[in-house]
Image (tube, rainbow, N blue to C red):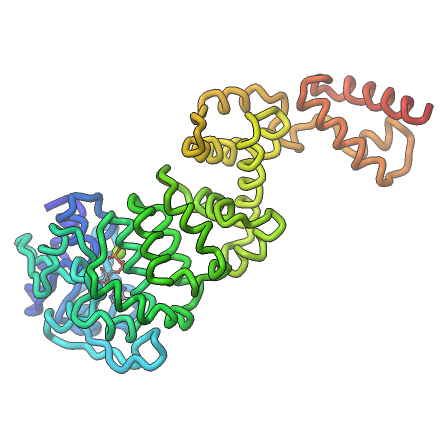
Length: 399
Ligand code: ATP
Ligand code: MG
């Protein structure tokens, strides 16, 4: 067993010693079979939350009403969730009631896809009631039980489905796909924040092309903010090959392919519930990206973008018949005389004193001019030199 499982093994064993069943479940079991790195392990148990809390001295109630208790053990936290069934979904989102049960099979039955409905015991043996192992081998995403019912119960599962198609680079089983096509409009009931999480994972997945294609074919995109009329752009995006590694570069490229003008990006991303910080970053990145497609960087553009964004952009151009020149960009950036405004060795009040003028709009304009002169290396970044230049510049204007 991998180290992540080994570390958690004593937690499972302690639950067993207390007379209950406990298993590894969900994504970690799937990823182990796929030989992918394992993020965190989830544990499912027949013990009820109060019983789990009696076994371990240190626990945190992270979601006790859903049956999840965080067990603190040797400096780590492990999510231990009681076997449960979910009944009567009335709003296509969350179950009305969660019922704790003692049967693993019942618990696995409520999970979304066969590849996610596997369990593994403390001996490393798989428990596979729904053919998950075979579907991993066949590389398909298939709903557990009736796809139609499962998406009706919880419409987010449709987005999760296309997300796993991309993340795992799997295909989608026909009935599962048809059921998404049939129920795609239920996505409307799901909070955008939750759709966003799945969509970003899809965009960053190794199989983004197929994931996006499935979103288009099933028409899920119709119920994503700002995408309903963007089928053509999404289709072009689905043909683009470069693997994306940051969510900001994914959004940048999306806005590019759907031909969203820079002036509309903020509104679009707000509807997707992106944070203010992300939105600022993405707008900057998109501007730099458009310019970079036109021509190579210059000092001013590098300065405006900043190194992180410049490197993200440079990575993206790789897919546009250009070769990324990351090292050159890095070197050019490092050679910039100043990297940000705060590095200027002159302040507004310095200028007011030296030029003997009251503050006014002239000040901001002059500071911007000085900033540019420093950036292109026309004046050294020393206060005396800057003030001399400023005096000349003002004289020139007055003459
Ligand atoms: P990731 O690698 O992204 O964490 P994961 O499969 O672990 O993938 P989680 O969202 O962490 O996904 O959920 C853990 C497990 O809980 C899933 O593997 C699945 O068995 C179950 N699950 C999660 N969300 C749902 C859902 N909406 N409907 C049914 N089962 C779900
Ligand atoms: Mg997980």
